[in-house]
Length: 227
Image (cartoon, rainbow, N blue to C red):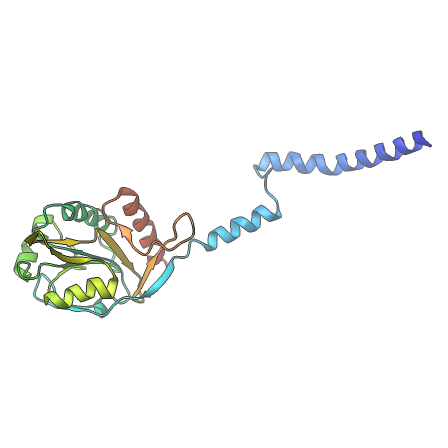
């Protein structure tokens, strides 16, 4: 009886080997030896995570640009754009922000569906004429990059309440200003968008001072341009 059992088990193993070995060899050849239904499902769900989070509609704004032209948020509809708060006399982070924004702008230069909005938090000094000089100094040639100025209280409300990006006067030095170094990303429909962090939480805004933040926003601009 034991011999018959061994023969039966051996026959089953032989049949399994005839079925399994060719499949294993084929997976080795195609590089899918670790693939399976569960892994394939994980891959598919990961692709869904590439869709950027919608934070909400961009706050409405009406300001004046470096060419004395009135610009509002509606002028950016059907465009993907990056928005920042800065000021031309900034002795610290603005220099790096300017360089990084130029890098972003050059990446998408010539694309009519991409733009930049740079809003000053020092409108007393940063008149359209001053902003024009600053734009020329930076070498900005895009007609879709608007450096914007207006009423100080209006701009501070826009920054602090509208975007929740801090802007204020330096209490220790009234001639200086403090502001966030973050960039906001807005899609063609006028929605603020962002990616998720490693824990799955929306990052809200992109670090305008960090190389990784700039690389991330470039990738996400491309995604939004293709939407």
